[in-house]
Image 1 (tube, rainbow over the protein chains, first blue to last red):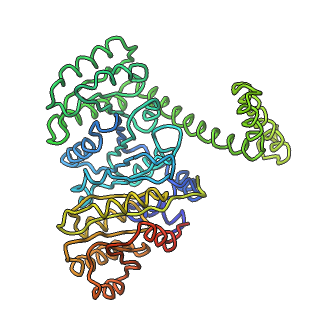
Image 2 (image 1 turned 30 degrees about the vertical axis):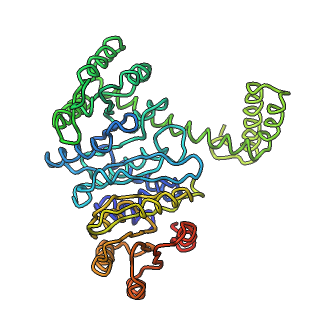
Image 3 (image 1 turned 135 degrees about the vertical axis):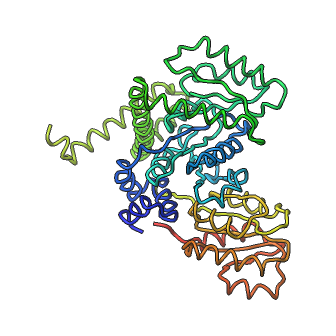
Length: 331
Length: 135
């Protein structure tokens, strides 16, 4: 199927066209980029929700529970579930469907598993593009479930309007370690597995963190839920909806939307810059020579990095001179 | 990135038997060979398997079955795939499948039937050799 045909299919709600379009966007192929250009003006209608938290926090189960609740409210749901790729083989086992088996037979739900494919953040580099395709396909809600939060957790915030942080009772140390990035990330916090001992302590710890945070106008609510039984899930969906309404109506909404747009552009540009710079560095042979010097203790890694960057800039400068593009020719 | 697109495989267990050791071993082997493997869990209906194959846009579907119901379930998986327009996937299967049934299964469209004693290397090589290339 060609791009134009796929665009038509996606907009018409054809599931096969949607699945194929997602593959193109995920592969970042020329067709994928064409699709994104064509579909982006048709996005912006879906409510987008990010679900993040450490491994084993119950994200998949919670996504399933939230989806069932959204369905009861009459909304259709697209889900993007990201799991890690192996850094060694680049393969992945994507098992999120196991916890959402019942949703497979619901025509109002479309679930797509993605491997992180070794990009910088925990989020697949192309995941935001996939969210956009589902948005254009007309799903009322698009949920993106990300690889367990870690140092890159801030990147999660670039994928969705409302990010939900999932934590558990007894994860006190973990909550402490999240201090720095926490407020940047989550607009809603939920203590999942709240039937276990220590749920109230976890809520108190989160509340204490919020108390010292430099909050903007939106104060993240802290909820308790048991995703497995569905307990607390309607309240969670209500809280997500409240944040969404805040974004739509409040004067801060416009600022938040611009902030999200900025984060998305910067994240994609950073990833592309990183990849292209490394490709140039390896291609030019500069990297290999510096590796020898640093490994032999003849040069320190910091200076080597500077030299590498200089080499890349020179290559790019020469390339720009050799092939004038309409942009730099006009200057 | 665009030039090294991993092969996407769905590993599924149709029907009511709950023994998925074999399916998991195959899933892990394919992962370690650099593929992206979607594993759906046990007790899948043919409709669920076909729908997952569609949504995940996989190139390959592998079915594991130990219950003896393969001649009942496999044709229904094929039907469900066809009714969704999923007509370009490589199909293979494994588990306990009597020798005399292999011919029937192959005529259904399964390119590989892997019984007990198969090495994971055989399966990896089979998938690499036959997975349809996507533009």
